[in-house]
View 1 (cartoon, rainbow, N blue to C red):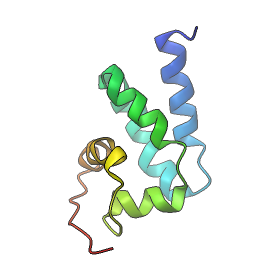
View 2 (cartoon, one colour; view 1 turned 30 degrees about the vertical axis):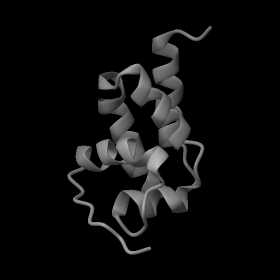
View 3 (cartoon, rainbow, N blue to C red; view 1 turned 90 degrees about the vertical axis):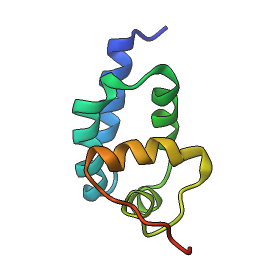
View 4 (cartoon, rainbow, N blue to C red; view 1 turned 120 degrees about the vertical axis):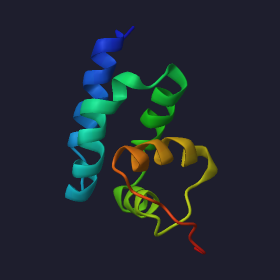
Length: 91
């Protein structure tokens, strides 16, 4: 079983090693400073979010596309961390 410290390190590495530089710059700093403050459920949600396509993630965080309900809470936390004010999208 993975220790909490190893899990945070693994998630941080995955956050900084995305396929799209913009997502590195959004998820990396969040992981560095925000992951340790998340509860177990939010960490599960974050880990699930990391499985998604970078282009979709970028559109969700930026407000260019609607967020699937399963990811809405964690995307709001990430956007809030960066001071991104999302507006509802008609997409």
